Image 1 (cartoon, rainbow, N blue to C red):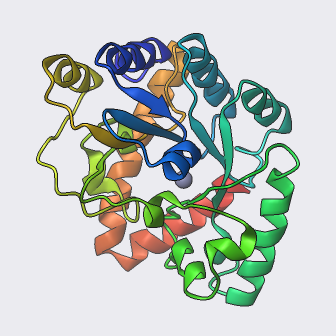
Image 2 (image 1 turned 60 degrees about the horizontal axis):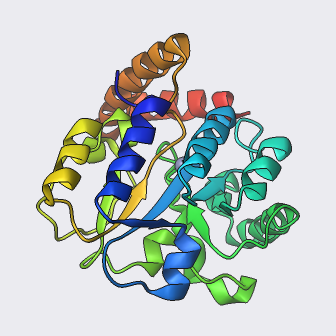
Length: 266
Ligand SMILES: [Zn+2]
């Protein structure tokens, strides 16, 4: 079984054995490191209890990463945020204000500010990261056409602050490391030819020295050792990927999908 916490541990171990330094987004942007480095980021879209397990696994291996939380009940669990912050991981805000306000820029900026202050109760947040909101027509990043990161005392946003001509971007969207075709907004212009499907492919590449020197890795928090949850999430992601593709071609499917997504996150 791939995408379990056990597999996740093996992945982290492989990078450490391969001589990679694994650090949070904030540290990468502040120190601009040379050599073999992975900036490790988690978008906690949901399943915060899994986030906690992944954070513990990293902690056991002496690794720190970044956890971006959303301001929705399925992500924003204060007790879990506190525990993850206490381990020394970076906490950031996974923002979606523009899609939540249906494109109202003034309201979105206000709500961004309020939500950022909210997360700063738990951690001195320095980086934020867009939530893709694939069912919405609004791109949450457009907020930055009106305001700047520094206006909020922020130093970075993964989609804006990295040079992806030099940094390999690897994401586990849709339970595959090459599932980019399902992503609507979680995309960057990468110059790399490496492509992986399963986690063992990534591990093998690291062992053989074929993995790029520097990378930003996004691992969602859907990695679980619980067989029931694992099966449910795999079946759901399978159908969701297909619906996302269909929704791009059909307005009807798109509007139904949009309504279902809103119901789900309520
Ligand atoms: Zn997200």
